[in-house]
Length: 479
Image (cartoon, rainbow, N blue to C red; front, side, top):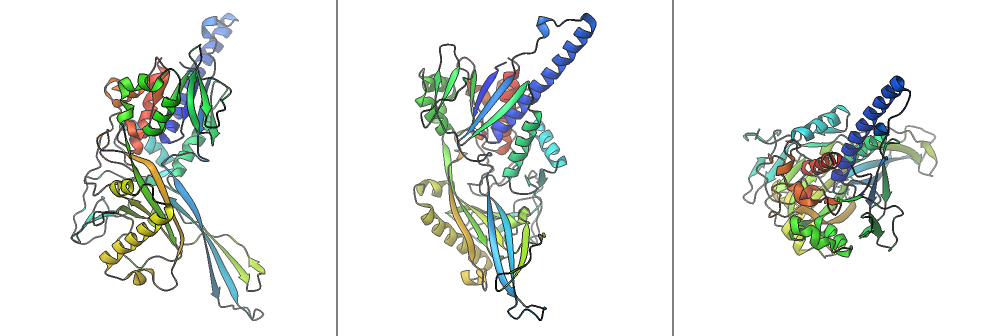
């Protein structure tokens, strides 16, 4: 097995790969140690055939500050102040109640589904460990003719037959979808040992790979500096366009060699503009309780009420006098006062408006969002907001590489960037018991010592990303 492995990117595919390979390596080392111990007791010597191999070292390079890729969550502090009547006669000017809410907005993957038995086992363990839960809120679809349909097994719309064919949707139990990735990283760190170890190098943007005479790879960063240690195998866990760019900058005509089998240059990702909103009060609407596919808009494809996920419940209350003196600073969890939303634009509209400024996108998507709600609620935008309500946070985020285009391998995605999804029951093409008949074989070149994992090698879903990493770990451990 390769002893020094580099992973470029820290999304769920790379986390899955690292956890799986470390687990296999750890179990193998433990078994070998036991055999050595038994042999030494019986023979008072250590056989050369049982000497432990060189430790496995995996180094993960991530260009961002945090891990997770498109399983991303934005943490937003929402400060609220209000005057309250004082019951203390010594306080003439009353009190100011200050509430600091923490909202967690999933602006990437909204949820994930699960069909593969191996992934299902992992999800079951996440549920047991309090990491994920089934999303049991009502997800609907809006249509141009005013029709509304429930697109989940759960819902409250009258005279609508719920569709039990929809698979279970899963979300993080708290702090947004990125919490799942952080928990997997913690599991990796627990497995770390003297025999197998993972190291994370954050804010490191890889520019190219340079091959040495002994066949090992050197990693070069965008500042033209090289990483100190060489690697036997390099794994790309980043979008195909970014992978192509790195391969193009690399030695040995690497892109053309790799492209002969994978056709990686032909694989394209569609973009997605996301809008993040926090209001100081809930909007006066009752139709979208949790989320909606918006087939009644040419601009927006998905609207999600983040409060419905119940991941933004932290609330700190502090009482101060009007003169600024602190009276109490006790922390307590309360029902959320503000309301947060995530809006995804359609792939078509995002493509057409890809290079617009975030400020322009904010204005367009915000107005379209309120227009959609005004239409279905039959209220003016002012009525939706109500008295003393305002948007305390607004931010547009551009996912330049959001989801694989339809002509790749994708039929459905967890980043919602398409119209009414009628079925989500797509069986993963990665089957650990049938390794020779899936797309992953196209993206591994053992002769060169490089490979690709990620949602784009499968169906553009969290499950496909996870299984791509899991499969490659199994493959490398068997060599």
